[in-house]
Image (cartoon, rainbow, N blue to C red; front, side, top):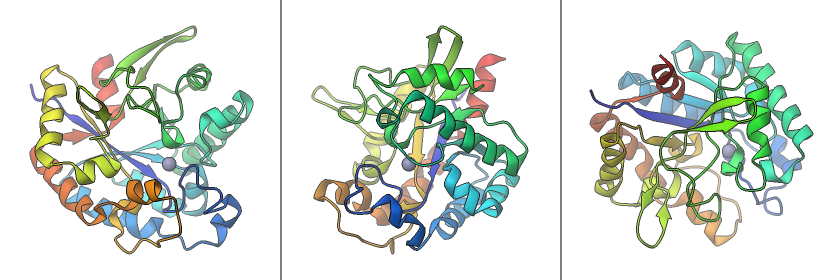
Length: 277
Ligand SMILES: [Zn+2]
């Protein structure tokens, strides 16, 4: 049986970037040009042509401003999951604030679609050593899976498992859906999305996906609407952030189309329901 891989999107605007408060202050977000509807529509068209469903981790504040967009995504059969409300890294806030942010986002999303939200992805993979308490809160709030722990250096921890696995928490079990990484003897690299998916040779990414599939496990791809926007506003940012955000933006669409040609992709909820059956 062929393994279906998992396609995910962090649904946010181009300026929702962690750790650049001195370049794009949070207070300026409301006055910046929103490009999320246009960019997401482009992505939805590609997925529609390929008859492929994805999980959209939607930022609550974006859903609040664009309920029609969320209805359109959900109406096309895609999964609506949560990316929190205010786009704050989990390890920078308290457990109480995390719970409030999570509830606020889930209430908005459920209010729009009528469906219960099953999954959560933290801004910038920010559930890691030091903020693991968030997993218990996710379970208490009724979430069935998390996708916030990157098996990568700096933003996560290369020792975290690189294929879907189950947390055993005091309140029960919960799936963790980590992003695809390329493991080399020196370093683990982000093959599943962002600059890694856009810049590494496609053959490397393809063989990393196949390797997981040979273990009977899916690989997890992650995209952002801003990556489909070659005219994305360029603001002054630190060099490394500029590279991570902008390198090879012109190749996002082609990469996605190759993946859609070569592999069967589906939602995280679809994977989990198959494993629980
Ligand atoms: Zn984000």
